[in-house]
Image (tube, rainbow, N blue to C red):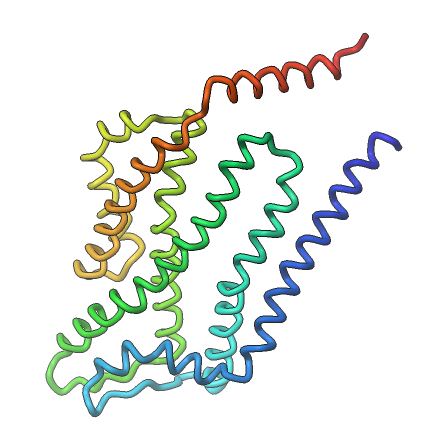
Length: 258
């Protein structure tokens, strides 16, 4: 029973952290739900500003005028609460990390959140006006543009996640190099393959047009180069590797039968 108590205490602590994270999302949602319609209108501005005078947004589902803004507000609440959610994750895992690991993880959590927000902002302020301007301009003559609000929401959320995750590339590069999976020099040698891979990922994550694919691939490549620069400052020192190995060896010896 004594051996099970630490596990139970960890599970109870994990439950507390999860409940706090969910509670923060619900609290933000309660504060924003009154303005759900206004939030959706703000999201629709990039499309509406590029529509012709006769164009409009429609709702093909009876419940869509209510549930589409409701869904958007809930997802926005999660985005806003991400820093607190990550703080709960950090407070749970921090006691089990070495000192040099804490120095790595803490700034990475902050920078990953900032990069995710930057990816969303880049999609909204840069990509959406270009993409929607292109789509509305190539509509055949006589075609009335009327976009369903649910379809539009799913489309922009997909792009938000695509650009938000794509902007995490520097974090992935730093972690891979720091963990010893690869090195900066190896990644530089594989740069031609990474360029091709960036455009393939852009093709898979964005609509089937060359504009949005390029506008995702180019930032990914720039962020990859930024990750290479940052990875040079996040190398394991020899004393850190030795201390980790010694700690692992001591823990293994402590569980060996006497």
